[in-house]
Amino acid sequence: MEYYTLMTIGYEFINHPMQFSIWFSSENKCWETLMGNNNLYEQINATEGYCQVSDITSYLVKPKLRPW
Image 1 (cartoon, rainbow, N blue to C red):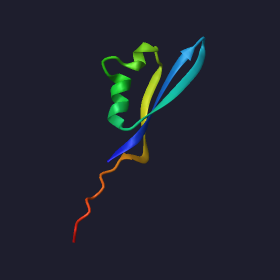
Image 2: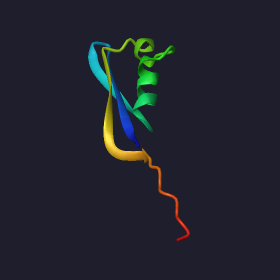
Image 3: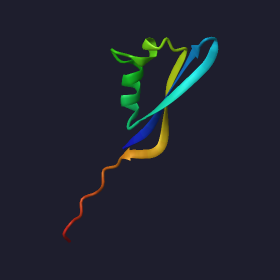
């Protein structure tokens, strides 16, 4: 199962600490965006970044109905 994951990035803007968060449908997508080739972390010169997994499923494999 996959769970919704919240990516939070902290940075400084004119000597004031700021942060923003983005929801992703899986932990892998969150980390790819945060630390991938075109990573968001370095583009905004962030001071911290992490992915926090929730307990809400984003993708659930349902069992197939059987005819018996």
